[in-house]
Each structure stands twice: as C-alpha cells, then as structure tokens.
Image (cartoon, rainbow, N blue to C red; front, side, top):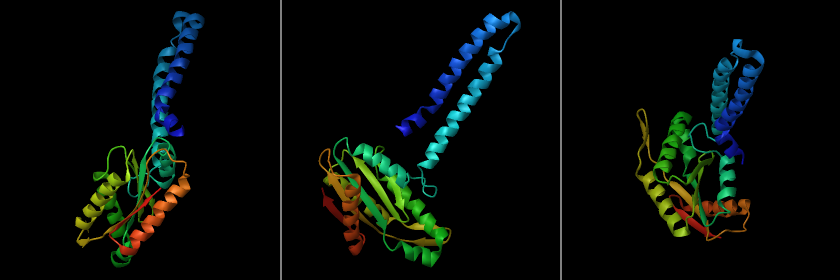
Length: 222
C-alpha cells in the first residue's frame, strides 16, 4: 500500500494543488474583483511545488528500497514483494551465493570486490524477466523472486545464471578474475499457507547444500 502511495504521489499532490487553485480563483474573482490576480501566480507556484515534492517523494522511496552498491532492490523491498507475490499463485525463489567471494576481497581488495558484485548484478538483470524481483540479500548473497514459475522453470533460470557467471571474465582496470555461484531453490505449486520466514528458510537450506559443492544448484520443493 505504501509503495502505491509513493507511486501516485505526484498526481495526488498536483490534484491537491489544483483544488487549492480553484478556491483561490473563486476567492480572487468574487472578493478581489478585477484588480486582484492572485490565482495566476498561485497556479504557477502550486504547480512547481507539487511537481518537485512528488519527484522528491518518489526518489526517497526508490532510495529506501534500493541497494546503493548494485542498484538492485534491498532486503526490505524483497520481503515486501515476497509477501505480496506469494499469495497470488505459484512462485519460486532463488537464493544465490558467490563462491569464495572473501578470497576476492582478500586478494584484490574491496574495490575489486565491489566491481565484481556490480557486474554480477548486471548478469542477474540480463538473465531474468521483467517481472522477476532481484534483490541483494546481504554481502555476497542475492535473491530472485520468480512469480508464476514452477520448479522446472526456476531450474532453467538458475542454470542460465550459473553458466553466465562461470563464463564471465570479471575485470577491473588491469585485474581479472573468475568466480562461480551456488544456488538454492524452493517453489510452491499454488497459493501456499507456508509462512514467509519458513519459505525463505528452506531456500536457505538448499543454498547451504549447494555451497558445500560449489558451482551447484540445490532444490527444495515445499
């Protein structure tokens, strides 16, 4: 509900401004007579203020739901969308971890590590659909919500991501490196009564099994 309010904030503010403008116009006409022209400057001022406020509100909402480093959604937004989408039908969840990412930071430094995370985020964008929700889960872990997607289709998406990462040469200035990812998958076939925390937990358990083998995909079906 809050996201919808932010989305339509400019229109709401502009409507409020037009309402105030209408009141000012009639007050100008009936009380000030022909010598008063308050409504014209009020129209300009109100339009500018409403537009600026609307833009700022949308920007603040976007920043509050976005990971600053990768530009992906953050953990807070992830939970909001998962709660919303899980009640609308079959859904799959991918939890993804960059294998041995700590060694990248230890060997090349955090600047290179940040570049790897940013490039990986772009790989996720290229290998998912418009309606999928991609979020940085925390550190080197990421999550992808796949609405209206069963287990078999989720496996295809996970495999596409895993292969794309394996074949990608990560680079920054004169430094290059390769990494792999491990993926945990859980799916529901229909509107499920399983709580959000439990749904995420089983995906995390699948991810843990995948991380034991590295460059691997593990599945849990709820």
